[in-house]
Length: 180
Image 1: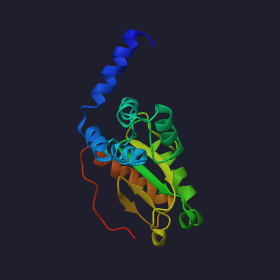
Image 2: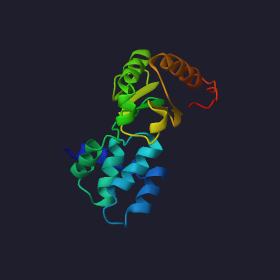
Image 3: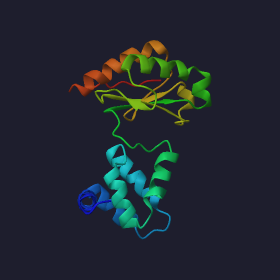
C-alpha cells in the first residue's frame, strides 16, 4: 500500500474510533478474552451492520487480525456488511413455521417489497431475511418487522403488513394491534 493510501486508511480507521457506539463497545469488551463476537454484536445492534472502517478499527484496538473479524462476520448470518433497509423483515423458517407455510410468506414478502431474500430493496426501504426459530411457535408462521411480531400469517396478510410499513416509513405510525 502506498504511503498516501496508508495515511488515508489511518484517517478512516481513526474516525471510526471517535464514534460513541464503537468506543463504548471497545471499552466494555477490550479487556475480556474472546470478546470479539460480543463487540461485533454491539456494533451490529447499534448500526444494523458492521462497516468496514469499524472492522479495521476493531482489528487495531482489539489486536485481532482483520481476517479473523471477517471470518466471524461472514460465518454468522446475524451480521451484515452493508446497511440493511429501514424495515428489516425477518421471516421465521424454524420447524413449526416452516411446516405451517413460512416459505410462502417469504415468497410473498419478496414479491410485495421487491427485496431479495438476504438483501434490501434498491431504495433501502425493506430488507428481507429468513431466520431460525424466534420462539413464537404457538403463533406459527411468524414474521417480525423491526421488532413487531406478526403471527398466524397467511400470504394474503403480507400485502397489508408491507403497506403498513410503507406508511410508517413515510412518517405515519403503524396501527398498534395485537396479533395472534
